[in-house]
Length: 246
Image 1: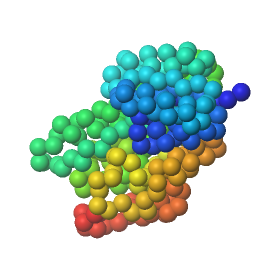
Image 2: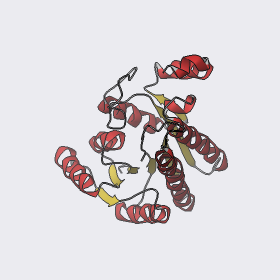
Image 3: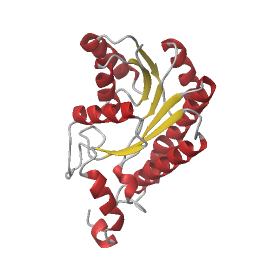
């Protein structure tokens, strides 16, 4: 019997690549995104390439919080159940403090933190009722240290990581695993406009690593594991003067 997964933010980037990776492994897929047209094309391409057991799609804006809960229920019904929910939808708008970019900061927090929390809360409700499950969330190495020109993004990812840790503790011994992923620079539209992307890997490689980590049901991991598991710790102790130049 194949596993089934709901992926938010599945029309591009990590979400799309992971959908292809897991389709190849025989997973049933529930794919959600704001971009309905792109999502339809992703579904067609996945079926043509891998013909997985099922591919359900649904338009979803994770900041429509009531609809997030409906989406989990509806897509689980369509697939006959969900084993994994991957809270992956996110944005990066590159705001600067005190420069009139507050609207970008607000939107980033709403999508990356509140929308992600809504997704996890809906998943937890579903899995508690089912008696088992696996919640996975996309944080970022940006959660390790506040970086210039991305303050709200860093805050959203740090907040979501801490939230997921709290969820793991609250669901302790409830037969629900919680995985926190901290991707580094993976080549996606979220960051491909940046001049400097250290330790960059392709989105396909990133998806392959993430699939393995999900199947191992790890508690937390950087993506890739090395060198970010080391550099992430270094970020926390670098002097502010060094961080300011990044």
